[in-house]
Image (cartoon, rainbow, N blue to C red; front, top):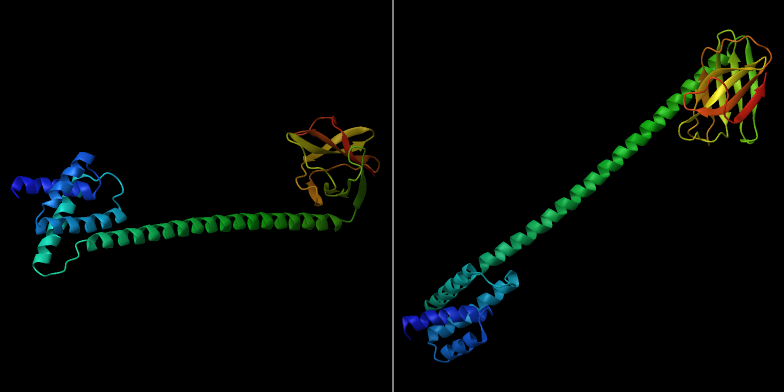
Length: 265
């Protein structure tokens, strides 16, 4: 077989084992294969084995020229090695590469999920820290409020005014503990609805029918007793009442909203 025929055999052999030739080229190759030399026959058999393994590893699409050249080169190397009586394994590098790729993929996925879990754990821990800090602040506030209440109760002259819920809040109740000498008081309310947006509760002291503001406050947790310190309540009246209304945020000069609680001195 001439050099030209041998080159043609190689080209068609590569295309045939890689299923990348036309029907006419396939017929031509089979015709050449019928008259092939023993060496070409061995080339064809080795090329089929190599191509099969290559296809299992990665080559499931139309092969490039580089792939064809590598296949031809490895097939001839295998043929020549067989001629010397040696057994060679030219596909080991592909197996090693594939195994390395799989290990890399598994390791990468493992690290990815580890990082995801770690980030989730960190976020959970951060949320727990925030919750504990919030709980600590609430406890500190309660301790401060109770300390203020005790300080007021220790005063020589203390008035206690009980407050009842009104029509809009019949279940509400509260009390004002008032230290007149120091002009300080503590308001405690319970069963008060949370304040709506842009609204606040306002405490009034009613003296001779005239309402005087004693400050504004907001209830954020209706299920708990809420304590509020009233500063500078410098009034000496022995008669009158305390009232709570719902007013615009910041308070009003005079009561404008519904009355939620009322208690007489």
